[in-house]
Image (cartoon, rainbow, N blue to C red; front, top):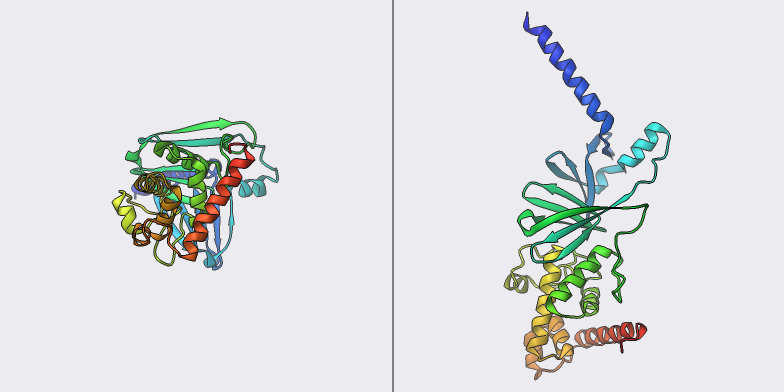
Amino acid sequence: MSVTPRIIHVSIRLCLICCALAAVTLADQVQLKDGRVIEAEATWETGDLLWYRQGNLIASIAKDEIRRVVSAKESKVGATGESPKPATSTVTRIFLKGGTQIVADDVQEYGAYIRYRLGTLHTLIDRDAVERVAREVAGGEQPALPRRDLRFTTGHAGLDQLIADSASKQQLDPLLIYLVMREESRFNHRAVSPVGARGLMQLMPATARALGVRNIHDPVENVEAGTRYLKNLIELYQGDVNLALAAYNAGENAVARYGRRVPPFRETQNYVRRINAAYRKARAVTGDE
């Protein structure tokens, strides 16, 4: 009988702690069609799934089971009746040990790995590949550090930076990498071709393995490997970019079979022609020709 008051006091204390936490912690609300509500610290989408995080738990749910998602900011407006004051934006940079820099929209750290977002691209990276993560506060609602020295944009500064860094490592023009990526995947890191090529640079699994890629859909691994592969092809064909592009599209065996010429495949010839035309046009606009 003497234990009961102690249990009551502990329960009251826990309730007070939970109430205090609820008062200061904002969460996204995932409202399901069956009436359930999931309080999540973070949510993100991949394909037909909505992923959410609750503490150390990461889980997903099919989008067709969801009625709506109310963001933490919306919840706060609804509760207080006041719009939140404009906040300063935070630019997050991930510095990898190999020298690559990722300008990410969102970074979340979970023990042995880091999840980052570039626009609609979500992926994980091993923590041991990361040198450091730096968060920089920028005033107002300014976009995240677009590259002013590039003749292109994917629509996302972080992916532009990744292309520029990968091209710099291989001493290639980043415009060429951008144009290959646009032809290959239209900047969709989940893209899979009918023959099995995958990711932003549409690497075949065997080629990716030969280049040391562990996660073929990871933007950093895919772009760096695809850039390295294109550089290898340019060197193989002694600087002939057209043959390198043809081999990237149709395979080295096809180029060899037709006497080290662009194969007479309509797809490959159009591929080489489009990249050439776009490259010349972009350089002409900036006066580099």
